[in-house]
Amino acid sequence: MRDEDTYADLTALFTAEDREQAAKPFMDQVMGRIQAQARLRKLLLAVTGLGGALLAASQMPKLLADSVGLDASLTTSIIQAQADVSALASANPLWLGVGAVVMLSLMAVAAMERT
Image (cartoon, rainbow, N blue to C red):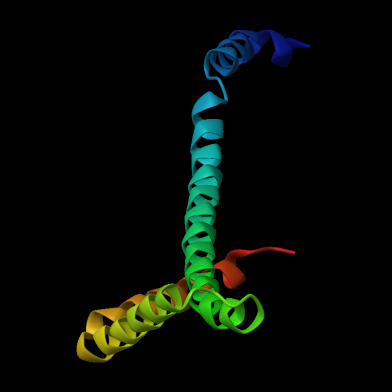
């Protein structure tokens, strides 16, 4: 009993200090990291989704030309654009870098995704 009376003022001091220090800064720090990971994941998914959409769009002329009978001038212009893109990729190593970034993005999404 005597020890409790001796340390009563310290107990009151620590109790008051605990009430003044809110958990908000710690919570903001933890939630900031979680939200940063979520933003990164969304960005990577958007970039890879766009890459997949472009890849799928590049295959559409062949599919539509065989099944629907797409207008010849449109088919020719799309095929010419594909040839130009492939020539640009072989002439400019930047396109190889873009492909590497897409592949790294896919790998990062696979590594960061939790099951």
